[in-house]
Amino acid sequence: MKTALITGATSGIGKATAELFAKQGIQLVLCGRRAGRLTTLQSTLGQQVPVHCLTFDVRDRTATLQAIASIPETFQSIDILINNAGNAHGLDPIQRGSFDDWDAMLDINVKGLLYVSQPIIQRMIEKGSGHIVNIGSIAGKEAYPNGNVYCASKHAVDALSQAMRIDLNGTGVKVSQVCPGMVETEFSEVRFKGDTQRADSVYKGYDPLTAEDIADLIYFMVSRPKHVNIADVLILPEAQANATTLSKTTP
Image (cartoon, rainbow, N blue to C red; front, top):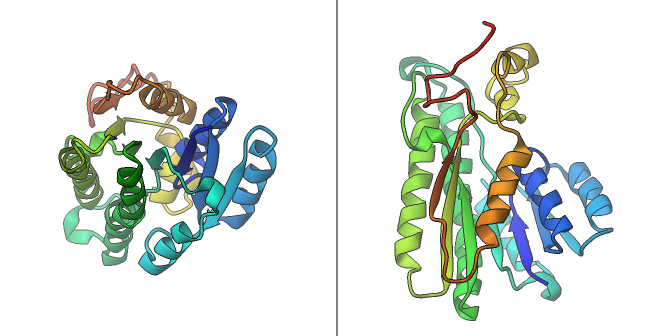
């Protein structure tokens, strides 16, 4: 039985991926900050596969390393790492941006990914196999108005995905990246700091991607034969052409 570690597993893409992996018989190490949600997931998915939960914030390097080091023996051989934890805070022009928002995005989207990845990579290299999937964004392919630091953080994920693939070439460890466009999750609610009306308006007038759409793609990537690595995928809803071109039927 394969083992997957998923960060940001309590909602959205991470949760949908955990649910799909469980259906496919992949045992899970689920990571997140919300202990209650992790407990619920462990209760439901644990009926299908073994599930171990780790409650920590990827921004905290010490807590992250301690959590990974605490993984029980039966879960320690990680075959798949899904670096899904990430966030966007605010949508302001750079001259009015919040330093706190910038710190949160860079600490979670970039540094948090690194804190989780390195100890898992070392284990994968030791056994000569593994697959890392970094969840990037269309924002990592092109900047858009008022996206500034969020776009910068996801451009860093894009660069790190390429660099990981180079550094790990020949080790048996694959590195892939998924870059979604508009996906309806809690993303916009976090970005707009709980303003649900503004967040809901982001997804009106067209059919956005769902978390399950991204989970389907992730599973397809990690289930390819050993000699196949789908390195980088940009996935958009039919209504979206690029970061700023979106066809809506209503305002």
